[in-house]
Image 1 (spheres, rainbow, N blue to C red):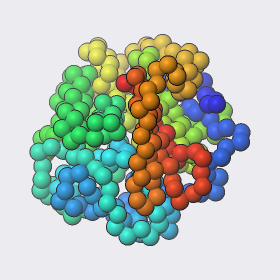
Image 2: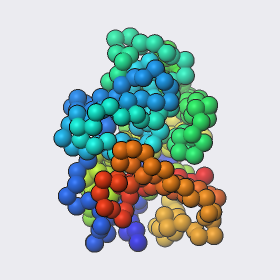
Image 3: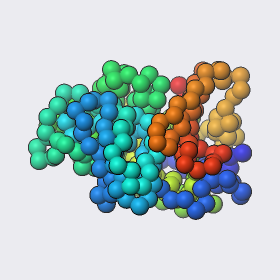
Length: 326
């Protein structure tokens, strides 16, 4: 049973925080590093392979690494997004890692960046359409189409060109655009400290955009959620900006004007999290990814659930659960 905090709203984006159960079978003593901090600390190296759909990940640190599907790595011959949730053991050596391109036109070194490896992982796919493309379609063309759609939606919402002259097809550089960053900050300044006032240890978040449940992420521990919260928030804010669909919702400097959207009641969110049995199909599949990842996918009619398990531990709960509305 999920327990939720009270909702917190910024413009057309509302968050409910998922609180840890009193008795949790999660990972009480196990810690994971995450991709952003590990690359920054130079304990994780993501290597270019020359193959669009595959990279090599190497964890040289003493802590197991959790990589989230949708993490974007910057650099190489083209920016990529990681295609699956993935557990990388400490001292792993080089391991193949599924990926998709999120920068269609480039296949060469960009300015002073190295083309043999990736320099950072500070961004996360914001578009629900893009996340569905990597989780379900697993099709590079669908990912490229979702990137173009997101850039067009942001352009429409903010009334300025969000593509970089340096590399117009780069989603990473769109996220780094100064005007986009200012618009995101108009949401994050309201929501960034909200988990601390949630009324208990937070292990996940549910989002509604324009008053409609959109997506959720739940983790096995409070510590893992805290490490990923900043990325999740920036991505949700970016999606909310792209979904405003009203020119009046953007001011001339790219920040959001006041948009009042009534969030659904918490009971509706709890029911959405639990899923409607009548809405579920029998389309459940599992996949083993060496060395330690097991993925379970449940395709529903209006909601899809993705679970990632660490097979290196005798767990009955997933390390990460993603829910995406259709």
